[in-house]
Image 1: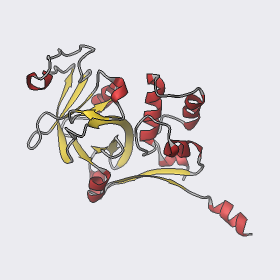
Image 2: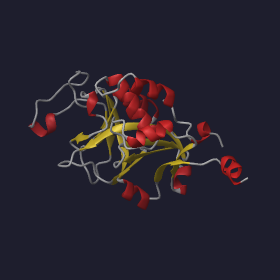
Image 3: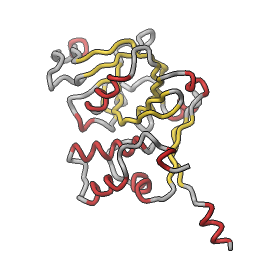
Image 4: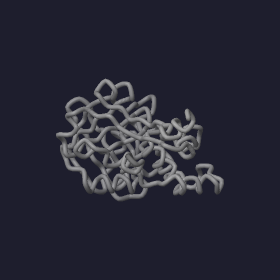
Length: 234
């Protein structure tokens, strides 16, 4: 199977990402940083916006295979979202297949994003931000300073209250553990997600260890062509 068939969700080709790095990438140009973040997410790498050894390997090694393993129950669901807290990746699955991967920001150490199987309960355009119960001044919907951005997908509240997937007013925060517990996305990404994901979609959130206990693994591997190996033998 060709690589493109293995990772059909890829939109950032490695030559473009290499060109960004060759220009002297240092993470200060937002458009370039977002491209690195998206490349990392689409390759099941740690999303941090830093071009370290793992990102360089994914750019330079041949015969890369990126794949996800999911429970059989996913094949029965039109849509389901999984948030990998360890790698800061939000993955959308459609009928058990990877549909899209997005980089995210998650809760900081003092207010971590919970490990939990949520469900989307509402979708709001230009959400109002209440200032965290009076801690901060509220911000009206649509204001560029609104920390929720222009879209909100609220998560189930039977155990946890106030969590959601949303945009941001601090675009350089994506790829960090920095929020009060919500899942932040690049604004253009959450607007895209908002358009096609319906209310009641399940959202499974967990560390890699927790996700694996739920039957989910998100991997990247490097293969040696059997042809090359055979030529070496003979």
